[in-house]
Image 1 (cartoon, one colour):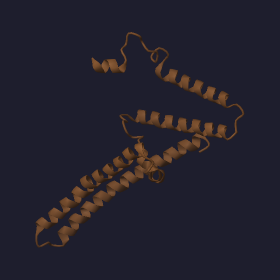
Image 2: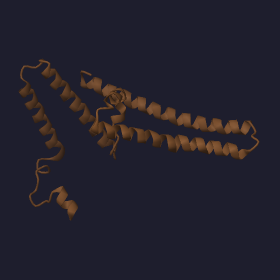
Image 3: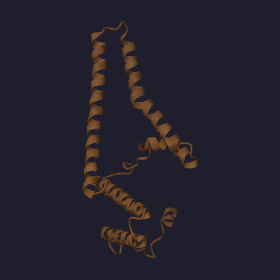
Amino acid sequence: LATKEAQHEQLRFWHELAMIGQWLCAAGNVVGICGSLMLCAVSPQPRAIGVVRSFLLVCAFVYLLWPLVKASARTYVLMSARNTRGFDGLLNVYAGIMDFDHVGVMTPEFLAWRTNKIVQEEDLLRRVYEAADGKYDDISGMLQNELELEAECFRETFGEQDWQRDEDMPLREDRMLQ
């Protein structure tokens, strides 16, 4: 996407699509459960325990077993992909397996910051690739400008004094040992 507005519009579209999917899944769950209960109520069963047992088995499969199998398979693929190239094709086709945008998000502000950072990095990579293709005359000048902009954003976010390391403050590993 070429412009910032187009990128933000695409982000809004994806967000709305995710919200529609969320409500569609919730409605599907309600319709499925209500439909199962209505079918059991309308069609008298010779043994009610069989109906209850099948309902509980389906719920256990849908809400417990299937997510565990899916998560285990994804974990196996990602762990194996770190060591071998056997799953490169699968990861190219199903790139969503590697989507960790939601991991560790505690507040909406942090998610917005992370998403903004990802968009900025994609824009920078696009410019680097364009520079490699010969669209820019001075690659080092472009990279210097980008690094200066990144440093300025860092200073605005964390302040001038906050990011400088205090010599009396122990390193992270030292604090963990104490």
